[in-house]
Length: 222
Length: 102
Image 1 (cartoon, rainbow over the protein chains, first blue to last red):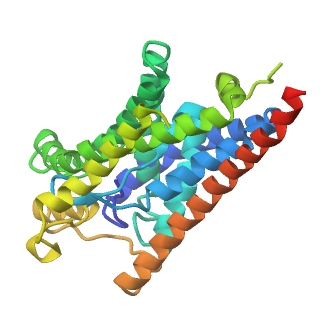
Image 2 (tube, one colour):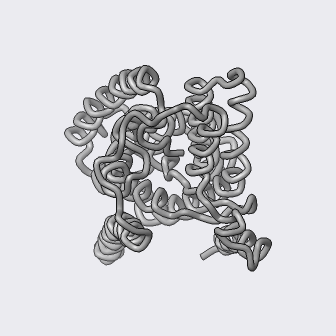
């Protein structure tokens, strides 16, 4: 989902920077609140960030014959909501932009918006809608799948907005096709990995997961 | 591990291994297993050939070997953190048990 360095016209780079900065700023405030009121959430925060770190470094082969990487943003979305996940995504994307030349500084705002904001936001909505209606394993799996798809869908929209040649819809279809065929099976793989990790963690720390709604609000446990 | 989890792990392996079997013998030179990010970049050049990237990376890995080193490093950092806390959770659970049983 990385938009390469320099491959986004300056005006769009600025637009996405502004939107992302607002959400990341809000996320940092939220994060401070969570760390202050729920210090026991720290390990889960570290795991959520580390999970994005690992998954976005794995370039997996897809049945389309190309490769792409999962995003890992579903777990953070469930545990901490989209705003805090956007802070975690910023760290991952900065590392990849500076050290690996994947993505870029000029396109950082756009990439944070897709991977750190829209993906987790859609995942969060899916989680909220399905929670309690299905077995939690499948809810987590679907959350991660939709968070991944939403990320790539957003990237396609961003590219089509910046390069509406000949028009937005046909450009969106082109970019969407490139990502979609690769990403449909990979998102399912990501959903499976996320659900497996979730089940394992909740087996080890069931009491932490009962508090997740509180963690998100930065509220006190009592 | 329950049957459900075993099934999930098998499905995961199938999704990752299937493409390698389907396109067995085909490689980068035949246009397979390239990155989707790169394909999107090429698409920009196709639809707007006059577009010039206006900003360059400060630094790029000098070769594919160095790049895979850094990708491995990224995965390792993440895996260490996840493994550390899973171990920590396991330790907590183990230590709490005898107290609960008393």
